[in-house]
Amino acid sequence: MTVHLVGAGPGDPNLITVRGAELLKVAEVVIHDRLTAAGLLEFTPDSCERLDVGKDPDGQSVPQGRINELLVEHGLADRIVVRLKGGDPYLFARGAEEAAALAAAGVDYEVVPGISSAFAAPAYGGIPVTRRYSSTSVTVVTGHEDPSKHTPEVDWDAIARLRGTIVILMGVRRWPGISQRLRAAGLPGTTPAAAVHWGSTNRQRTVRATLATLGEESLQAPSVIVLGDVVRSELDWFEKRPLFGRRVVITRASEQRGQFASMVEKAGAEVLSVPTIAIADPVDAGEGLRSAAEHIGTYDWVVLSSPNGAQRFLGQFRDARSLAGVRIAVVGPGTSDTSSALGVVPDLIPARHVGEGLIEEFPDGPGRVLLPRAAVARDVIPDGLAAKGWEVEVVEAYRTVPAEIDHSRRGLIQSSDAICFTSSSSVDNFVAAFGAEAAPDAVAAIGPITAAAAESHGLRVTATADPHSLDGLLDALIKAVGHP
Image (cartoon, rainbow, N blue to C red; front, side, top):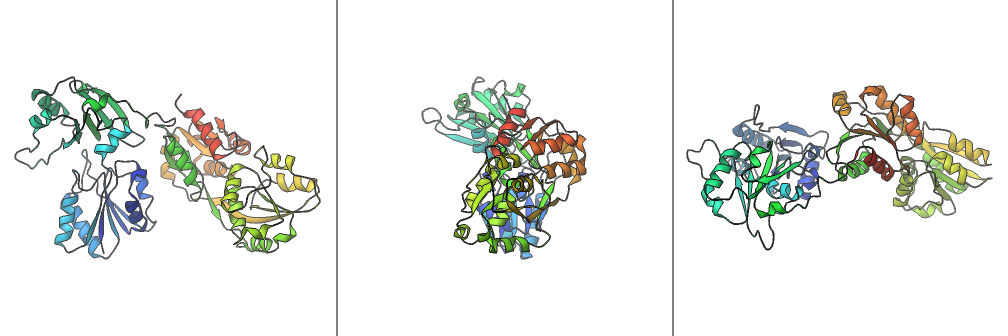
């Protein structure tokens, strides 16, 4: 079996290469660094064995020799092994040593390059490492040479004489000495300088100064230090996103979190996923749903009140033409998007995206209406349709059940900036699991029904989505806790 030495990139999990992501999805063992983005481990199967061998500069570290042994042991065990290394495996890392150890043991290996923080961190900090007319070269140098060397190899005098951009990795602890050497060698103290801390992550902080004054800033590792005229460029974009630096709790079911989590992350926030509900099959294992689909021609309308209901019901049909002659009504844009993605464009979407809004716009009967929905739901729609002369058949399409709760996350939840709820059941299960006092100060709800459920538990709802959709929820969240 092959051991894969994979570059994890600079910190943003979205910067993993396609090949790296493919390998993580099938990995049986992942041996990862301290600086590896935690989000990348979510790519791995639940059965994957994860081994943290990170080198902590302020604590205990796994010796490199032991890491090499682990790679060989698992490689010889005929397992799919991913060695996940921050940045690029071969740039100021120990990838070459690990590859050599595998080769000596007769274990096949593959190297998957990664995006280096030497270029990504400045880009995320608004600094291009080259400019066509002013900075036409880049020198990347380590500020932390192997301490076992008797004679340092970095010629800081020569580097000071270079024109162009200087990028220093792992240089924070030795910065006073490095700065002094560069200035003594003739690099002007007025040379623009910047440090990008935790580049490409939600914790990023960029400081700009000069070679002489950068040491006066509160520098912390890990930081990428950039010297040169390119630092004058202030092409900031990453730290200007509306939710940058915020942590947002998402309580949606694991199967549903992806879309909204991606939206929140793109707005700059760190997402803390705490599913409080899970989607389960109906108690009859879907027999009622299948029967209704087989007799679809006997209905005049199908009302879909949630994306889950739409997915479960429309998934019964191999060909959307089976629904010919039957009109489709949905409650909101999320359900409409799901329906449309499955090839069925709704005939009715009410202006108010709640059950009451649907009843207001639904035509009068008589006729038959099929309502595939959750096992437990409000009776506003079936009662309202019956009052308008319709015969309504309610079919259980799915159940929402309490998710398995990770109570160790309570502290992280409480210290977050906001929490989002997209259903009444997610509110009920959150309070049952953690207590209302664990909710952050800012509470955002997707609609008035969910907001009412939160308030019934004593939560103060800060923002309610309008429209009652994921886009509306994101807008409400930004208004509540975003940067002005």
